[in-house]
Length: 195
Image (cartoon, rainbow, N blue to C red):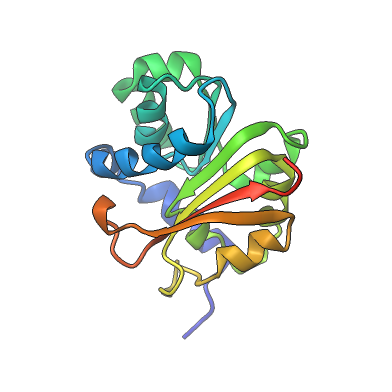
């Protein structure tokens, strides 16, 4: 089997984002909200890496969170976000780009919360440097919801506890995601050490 190249991963998500399929998975956003509310104040700045149609950001927004930023590689998904969640689109910053192209632009500790849901698992091994950048821009909490044991041509198995604890975080919560309809996924909440 030929090793997957970075541009193949990017092309796949640019062309196969299926945003409306993600818009209908509200139980996942409700599951995430329980953990966000436990750790992050509503006045904090929030970044979602790989926001797709914006369902998670919109759910947080509807529950009083402001200061939203999303990074999304798919133009189709970014356009869908504007049509599906116009209030969020007006108030949020949505960056239509691969994360690799924009992550270094953010200042250290720019966000009170950075999170991803089934996105970090698709980061190509050539781009693993972004995890250190994620740690750099996270001011307080980081939440990952990822399939850690699965592997395929576009899923790269990793242990996010090991990765982010190496970058100055302490895991404070771990949970399976069955109630969110995400079999074989793990939610991890990390707190930046010293914050």
